[in-house]
Image (cartoon, rainbow, N blue to C red; front, side, top):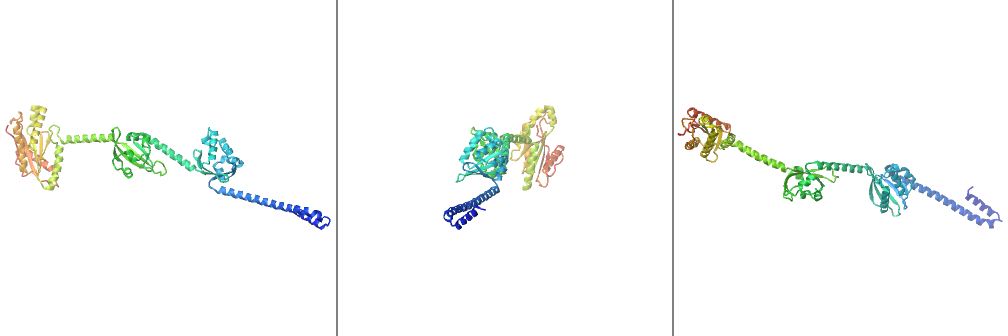
Length: 480
């Protein structure tokens, strides 16, 4: 029988018994009321405990549903609740979380197991620093639990003094940062070994780093260039743009403070990683030596060209120069329908001259004849060339056959006046045979036609055959 039922029975008994009615009923009523209130209180407590248990279950479910690790601590920094994400982040701390305890106790357990790499060898100092940070409630910090994993921590104290710790798994970010660091280290090593200067630039083309070669080429130290815009560092008078440097290397002349000048090319290479601090590489290549070599080669080519176009012995044009000039004049005369004339001049009995006077005497004779021929062909455009060992040619642009004959006679007269001795012949002096030809070029024919007809004319002169209509053939020999 329940206490409430027993009290009701006793109260009824007292009321039904006349003798007891006055002495028993009041205490019994009070007792019944107390018992009733106690039973109601017990029922309320049971319901409260059930509500609390339900709230705790709901809190646990909510915490476990979150994608981050969550810990709740009371005002004394004792662990109140945590979710399974925290255990997943720190599986070695599962039993410690289950036991509960203070935040400091949890830290010490983590240190005991050697799970805080940055605290190794200085555990107590690290613990003291971490507890100070806990008091200051640093909003964010990042903890690296291993080389490839990390946790970002956010701590916040509530208005009631409770502490909420939220931990996010940032292992992917840690691995990405490590990859970027490795790439940066490889880039730094590569830049140090490159013979070119390398400037590492951010997205606004400001210098972040530079290798030693770039500092030498640009004449500035690394710290002096750091933070400077690329165009300021290059100090070029050219209006350079980012797109121009990307399209093709730009040639610049750099002037150092000491007066030294360097010729360089600068090019810009965009990097694909938009999140990286280095977005562009500027490659600076010293081409000063190449330019000097190119200048020397150009001078040598000019000298070789001059040597190939000038006969070394006589100083007049070479046969190569004659044919090159004739080719150009042939086309010009064909376009304008103007005549071209050519004199082919041979020193008679020159083999006997060499035999009598030797090679040195022959060279001197050729030099004298060349000077006389140059003086005889004084009009602009008339080209005197050495055609073979003892033959010369004179190209006469825009000249008819009669005009060519006049120049030929002038050459003979000049040689007659010079009286160059030649004891190996009956004449006693140098004589000439001149083949003269003139014609209007046809662009469909080769320029060699003029040479061929001049050679044929010279052959007929030497053989004393009659001239052809387009040439005047004669042996022109001065009387000595």
